[in-house]
Length: 271
Image (cartoon, one colour):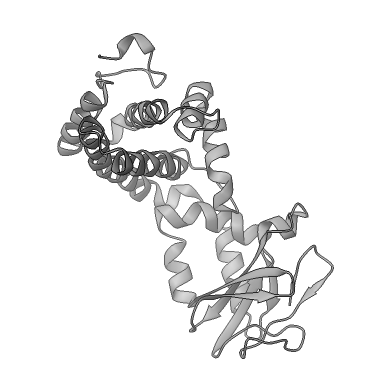
């Protein structure tokens, strides 16, 4: 039984219709959590979805429940524990499990998982996080090459896609680098802006086109955003990674200087 505002019941059943209160969908259920952070915090809007996490083996799917969209995800306890130890999973685990409401827990598995999640800290996966961040930023160098190359050739559709990939992806990586705890992926871009400061916030806003920027301006901003990320994580890069990232920054028009301050001055830009 999930609640859409902490009071009103949502019922689910394995058959996809209305079941008895407390039922969660699917077979072999060991526990069920849900509600979604917006509902739990009480700041949901009409189009908010209800997130249901069923612990066990089943098929993840979407379904309509009354006027709400319910997103039902299945993971085994072992899979969830593995997520607790991955760089991309630990930030949400610490935040999401804190606010999730346990709906059904016949064997106490969900309660046990919540206790484990609440005991998590970044130190346990610090080395993994640093290695993951370095390789993810290195991997996005390919998008820089694609953006620059396709833009030069007038392939605006492909370039716009690569611009969007950079604008979307960099905050997720920096959230791990800054050890940010969140209970919804929707918070990541604002939380990273707060953590990174005014330069990042301004450039990310331009890359996302929040101020009505032109195609060219959003492309330029996405490249600058990559350079800001590169400077921020520079100390984590090994020799191979540094070579890739430094060349990508040069292509972007923002050469990566040794010991450069994370707030890259505009005067450093090459034409």
